[in-house]
Length: 375
Image (cartoon, rainbow, N blue to C red; front, side):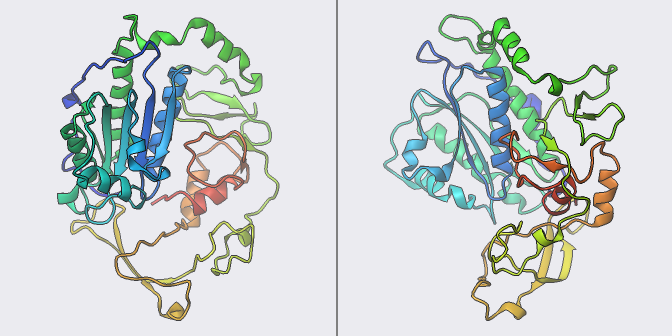
């Protein structure tokens, strides 16, 4: 989470472009992401879930740029392509997007993309390396147009130096409006493809116990959650905007510290950490900004000498390190005090939204302590 507002995109500058489908079927949507830390992937699946809710009969897919050996196969004729990409290092594409990015930007023999519809959402930060802010998304957007592809929506620029979630919400709302306004072959709105009959069938198929209960105007919706909710009526708050996590009752009264031991050996098959994860002493941790602020960009110095002869710690300048957050207990406790669920309730392995980025099977307390970066 990086910094302040320098080049925050003004939502009013979005230009809507109508596009048409080549068949009577709704145009398939391919969401293609390149992600270094998982945010672009998270946004990709969030958009996919929203699209699936609105258009259950539409072909919607999500793929990483790295999931296909031949980069050209990512570009499918007749589909609307939604590209999401972050920036890694100093103006570089994410590791899992380097092959496709190099191919699309540098291959002089790229075929014409005439007839291919696309839009781009970039993820960057104005708080760090400002000259390279969203440079990968911007370059891709320009290059696709040069190759003859048709831009259906102006590029969205997510700024992690301000509030990238709001930037994405604004851009995705405009994208949904675009689909709703675009006519199909019969001249009717795409939004009409979800009929009242389908809506009724979906409602009837829901588990009665999971239906949101009626609340006073302005209050968040609530669902029944026995053994998890702390309220007397056994209901808990849920978001009307984001997917709901499936929680099940606790199996223990304490945090399972043995799951979070890190010695790099991988000897504990139930360990939260991957094999090769080591614990280092942090000898300096300071904000990377001159003027401080609320940015999450820090310059961190760690001591590697103890492991210099350890083959598992083979680090060279320019390599990426994955740093697992371990949040302060007092911060976690303060957040839990504002939740209305049992802190040792378990995030179920089954029934979670595809966009959920963390491991399942952990308790709420363990997830907030070891997965989410609470700043």
